[in-house]
Length: 123
Image (cartoon, rainbow, N blue to C red; front, side, top):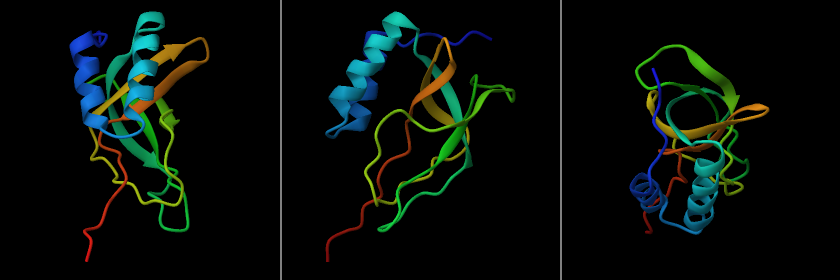
């Protein structure tokens, strides 16, 4: 099963999902790699690490899959998007979308779309 490359409109939606200081950098990174390597939509499944806390940094890692399949393309991948230190992150449910590309050394996970810093309401 082939996975389509992201088109410009999908990249724009991805950038809007991020909404924050990392959005322009990740969008530019994804656009460059889409031209060079072919960014692919993948399913991500958490396979290790911790979500982080006020005293520890998030170390979540993921296995990536072609959407709709159960054969892992790669395992133990951390997103290339930088994480904020000493912040707890949301752990995405299995089989949610991410973005990945393959270069000469193997698969790289650009982003697990539903991994984001948790926030608490102000009191």
